[in-house]
Image (cartoon, rainbow, N blue to C red; front, side):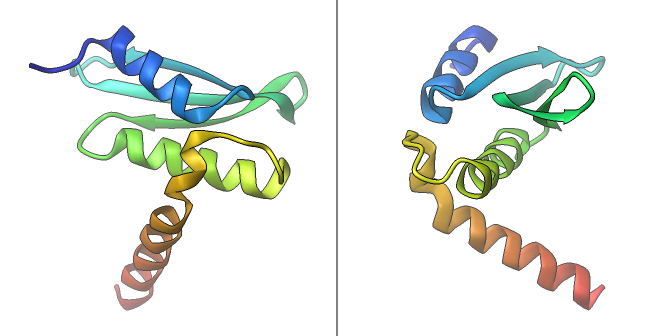
Length: 103
């Protein structure tokens, strides 16, 4: 059984930690769209920093990877369960960069 949007949102919020604001919407193709924003950082003007990734197979992972990198760079020492994913996120980033360099 596929988890509901609200269940996914609650799980993602608990993994992202206290600085994160997690919102999951549904796009025109009925796929989940993941948005993780920082409660402290402002990106432009009044807009909060955020990672916005459309659904598909890895939308959650892509958004969480960006969030993990944001936490480690901008909020070192912050405790969040998702930081356990940092080595995997770094590996995926390295792999993407290698693939882009080869293509």
